[in-house]
Image (spheres, rainbow, N blue to C red):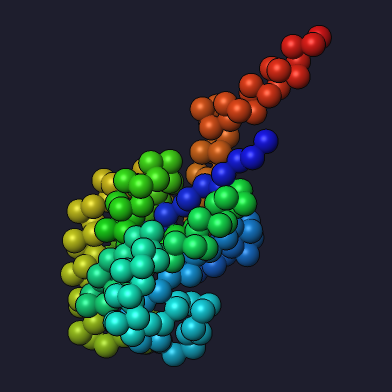
Amino acid sequence: MEKKGNLIVISGFSGAGKGTVVKKLVEKYGYSLSVSATTRAPREGEVDGKDYYFKSVSDFQNLIDYNGFIEWAMYVENYYGTPRKFVEEEMAKGNDVILEIEVQGAINIKSQYPDAILIFITAPDVATLKDRLAGRGTESEEVILKRLKRAKEESEDIGEYEYVVVNDDLDTCVDSVNAIIVRKKCLRENNIELIEELQKELSVY
Ligand code: 5GP
């Protein structure tokens, strides 16, 4: 019996620590992680092909034209997009794929894949968010302010997400996200084929 993998969308305010949460989810639970393309400049330590595929604006626009993305969006003056090939191949193999994307992308994914699981990660409060943004040390004051303004806008879209998880303690947050995914997979409505198969096999008794 072939079962397609799930699409898991993880969003959250910049500084909520979602990158760390996602990394742990991959390490601990073996989810496939989609690497996005972006026109943003690499931060120190970021590796092309691992953290992002870093693209020029014209290369990015070419990929849009060739239907290379399942979704893309503009975020704080840069383009970000989810490459189509990896996601479709992984799902076809039955692997669960995590997309770490912002809210416009999440809404777009939900309209194309109604079964996608949308999870919003937040810091426990705004003071923690600000501390984490400043503590990262990679962003200028101006960019931090832009990201906080963007967080304000994003907070208005939290209604698009089925789940909200607070990232206070990292391990608790990671396990909560995993529990959400496991719950969805275990719903009876998502196991109709399995049930039918069992009933068919049992029918001889
Ligand atoms: P950052 O510049 O901090 O790495 O990412 C900025 C925002 O872009 C984050 O909210 C991140 O989740 C989002 N993002 C990263 N990749 C993608 C993508 O492929 N599509 C969309 N829509 N957003 C993305």
